[in-house]
Length: 184
Image (cartoon, rainbow, N blue to C red; front, side, top):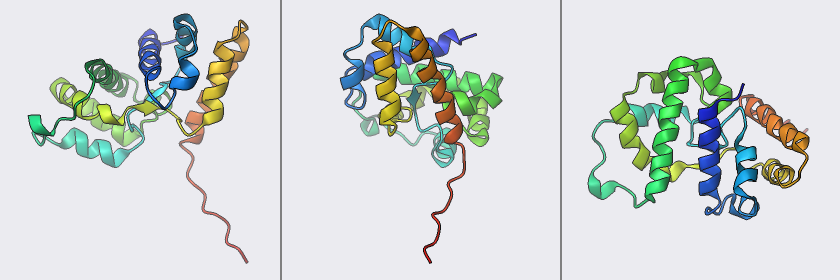
């Protein structure tokens, strides 16, 4: 069963992305119904540096370091989305911590820090973290192209295959990097 909240967040992200340089070209050509079909994934299509433990340990622990003058000038719709995404991340980290890794790419320590966080802290972070919003696996051009192409076709089977390949990307992102073999 798909998580309706996650699907809605993905759809809102894709709607925002139609105006952003990272995915706009491919997804802007899709209809709203096609973007909604793309959004129906068992993982987040967006990223807020959830994989970066050091970043979130610091950001969730900071108190009162931001002042009005420090706040970036960011679109209100974007800030609203980021706040919702952070609340969703808190919810997943609090209720299904093991799922946070595949659904959001969030390591255990980051999930634990989110689970300990307060609502007011997450609200404050919505503004400051908006600059970090990006497409998950934005470096995987093939994935995003395949997703947009499959969504533009009437056969939903291929779209589902591409969506499920995202689970492989999520799992692969957790594998330790191997050092390059030494030349002899």
